[in-house]
Image 1: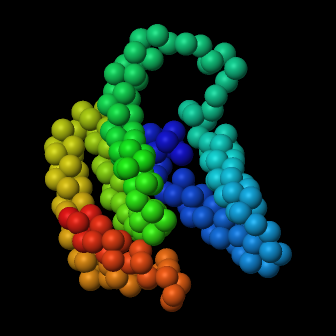
Image 2 (image 1 turned 90 degrees about the vertical axis):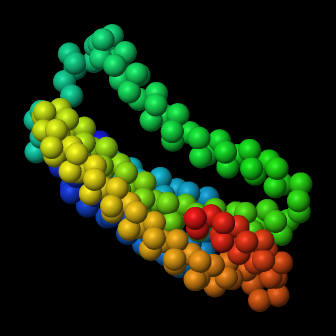
Length: 212
């Protein structure tokens, strides 16, 4: 997927990802909803759908993009390129690891507070992840666009893309912040049964702060 994006084709991997997402849902409906298999089957269907997406991407590259085909003689270490990759990639790796590590530390602090608090935290994390995914995708699109244009020496397009990307990010933030603030209680009630509402209040409080 990243290789296709590097040559300017961001639509094809998105189509494969959409297909695998639909496939994942259909497989869950068949094997879990229809045949009654359990949580292990859910994990298997997810991995299978992801494998199909990856397989389609590889097949497409070998059929349509000769530039990206891997040949046996190309599996050679390029120390200079590896050093450059680590210099740029380490910053991104640090950025992407901060949130999961932070959540892990928070989870450790929340676990002693009781079952209802743990349940509330897990529920708001689902909402949190869903809300952040589009924003992270916009950010990833900006990085790809800026990298391609920087490589092509088109500085004006870099500035323009960065400016418009930030505007889209800001617009999405206003939209998702408003939606979470207006729907925080109904969102929390999606995760609880009628008789168990203890987790709603802490979840609503968490979402009120996290919206900003």
